[in-house]
Amino acid sequence: MITTTAGALAEAVRDGVDGLTCAPGDEKDLLRALEEISDPETARRLRAGVRPVDPEPGWAAYLRVLLAG
Image (cartoon, rainbow, N blue to C red; front, side):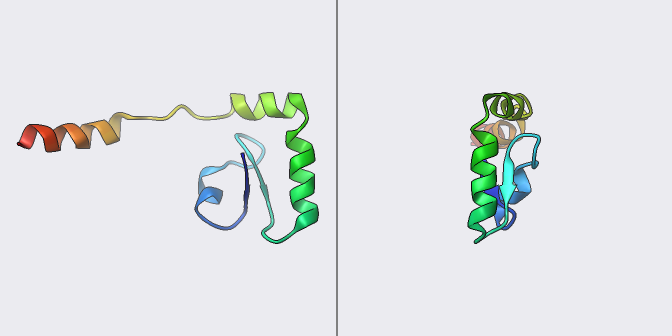
């Protein structure tokens, strides 16, 4: 994933670990990120850095509502 350093996605993406960030409105920085992510090894490394989704908190809240009736 590529996102800018501003906005909600910037909080979720760890630059160089599970995605890449670039400066908002900076076409050269976006080009850098696109070139970087197009490298197969970089893409593999970033995919390996993605944290698994933890469904437990969402499911626990959902089940509490269902079981409360």
